[in-house]
Length: 242
Image: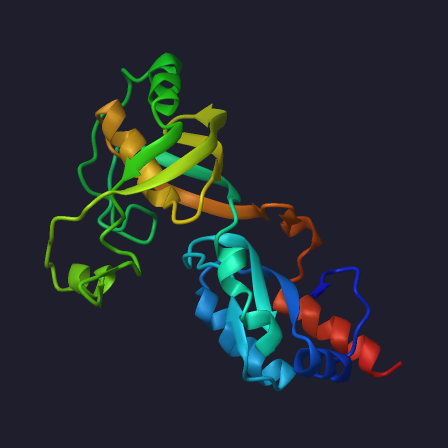
């Protein structure tokens, strides 16, 4: 299966032909404030191909690697890509919470953090390693009884959620600039990084939420090889004229 990255030379015509015959994958660097669905919706008219899907949702706040399947042969393999482990770099803020567990919500429960030490933070991170039970954020697309949680959350309907078991192969602090903590996570499918930030804030007793997130790897696939949609458009335009 062909993977198209920033080093690929290919025209729109060649993409259409490959998508029809075998299917292919695009390494896309998702922009902030776009949903993963937005990326797919923009690619369909750009490539004039309807059969397009993506390998795993990134929240609008997040940027980074989104592997997009183009053509029936590729979309059949999406579940295999979704099952792969992911690596993220993130930033969280302590001393406040939000309803969304990220910066899309308004700050609440603001409190003093002057007593929080580096040792406190390291201890909290040390408890978030290996297999953990994680409650998904209420503002998420996870379905319960056929309804997406964010639909219920927007109606201020709260329900008791069952935890999901996920694995954090690595969850390490990269730097501390209070009230911000920068970290890197290598995790299994289904992990909510927003929930990690929320739960570390709770462990510290001062609350916390995610302020920035970038997906850098889907197993061996790196965002360093990815292109933005603008770069992809230029790439195929340049090769169309050759």
